[in-house]
Image (cartoon, rainbow, N blue to C red; front, side, top):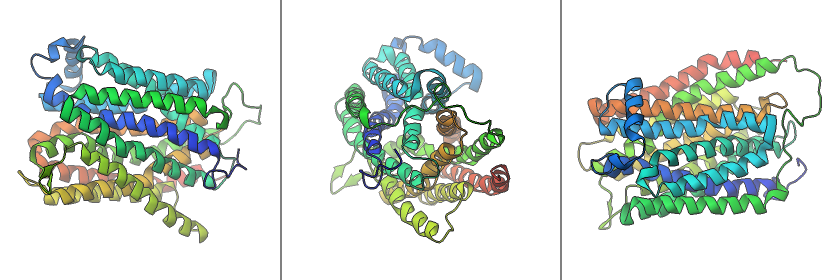
Length: 439
């Protein structure tokens, strides 16, 4: 596959995988745009929450683990747990693919389960079942899809990092479109219309993957890999990947509040009127998708110029830069947030700075896991990188409880400090990772 340059210098399979993930991201971000608003504005209110099958027991378990919570804190925690488990379960899906079923079958099963989950969100009673289907589907889909991107390239192919960046740009088309379609339907016509649109998007993703399967890389797994001499450094390389995820988790825990508390805060306090038209609050996430595309587009030429001089930063330096960009985004919000009628421009700059941070972090951590993982563990280790994103989401959900006692300014300042902490952690751990990767 590494000789294929048919799609903008990359293998044709990258187009199929990217198009598939456009629809997966369309559904995922459509869900993200509406989930917090749906819980706070409808589902958790009297007359609705009683209809959700199993919710009383579910809340009892959460409060036994995390303590009593207000409705807002509970909604923030559920949002974080959903995003977290969605991105943690790919470790299980990666292991199943590496050991037993292969990446292709895992991705197809994941697409179908996610479609079923989004369609089940159209019923209040099936809310918890829908989340379970979505988390299970994401577990089979996400890590295996990312691993297939890496499998398009041969060992040492310098296009791998750029391939993940191109993939990130493409999938953010879905993130851009989701709030416009799902968010607008949900806010203007009813939440269940938005969730149904997300399910239809997933069905299009199923068709895209199925009809493009001839261009995809062969499955690489422990069961099918050719016998090779034992890698004496395999454990060191796995440990290097695990350590690299630590500052990434910290930065993501800070960044993910842009899709959780910020949306709830913006609906209540932000002036969204433009030329006499009040934009739906979910449209902020449309700009987020565009901002991530801009962030990645700005990052690629910087890396290319540095690489031409033999000075492209390593994984920990890239994570540090991304973390500082996240910290600067929240620092700006802490300085500009007001109790009422907060201006729009700082919020747009928030998403732009976060997009730049993602451009430095997301392609880097996935490419690092793909290129560093020992043979036969690639899917599992890429899934570990995805799991790190999930752990950051859970941390973000837990942090949501501090919004009410701290207020917007104090809460955003806390998130800025956490972003700085991620950068410092990356700097401290850089020599450790360097030593682990020495031949």
